[in-house]
Image (cartoon, rainbow, N blue to C red):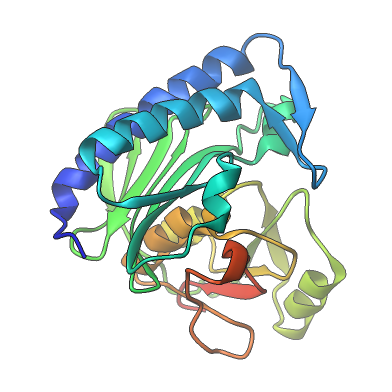
Length: 256
């Protein structure tokens, strides 16, 4: 594996994420043309423009690290290595297309080492919220120029709060929440769900619907670096570099 200077790489990736986010917002604020991939999921010019920026910059600052990216279909057949990037240039495309004012779409850049997410940047350009973290530096949020360290919270006396998908909420999720006595839920799109648990605005994120590794890697890195954990429903380790980079169900925990 290539030796990583985590704080310097985070600095570079934050700049890249903001550049990609700026391009996304230009398109968001104008008319949006949408196409559909073979699996029926939407893709826009914003996905493609953001990916071009990220891949070009990453190939400059870390040319020897494999990149697997959502919009680069050929990369999905690459065999995972001990160290590789997982990129989702626009996570929450459905939320992006809604223009509902919630801004729950993100730029995701995650680094995987030995199957574990060790570094991640999640930027929500419409909200100007950036979360970034590594196993060596801890986890941080930057909002409107102010930066603070973040960590998972103790579950409040009023009870735990869950985050759940806006577009992919299913019966399995509802059953899990009921069985675990979770009465309050925040519905939000994209990898912000991980980040809300990481910064102490929620306590748990159960996910039973389909996701890909590039959807989760960056947010997962933020949560783990903030003191949380991500496990399979049977409490076994949730890891990366799986076949076709496809995730199974998982539960992302704060102190829940």
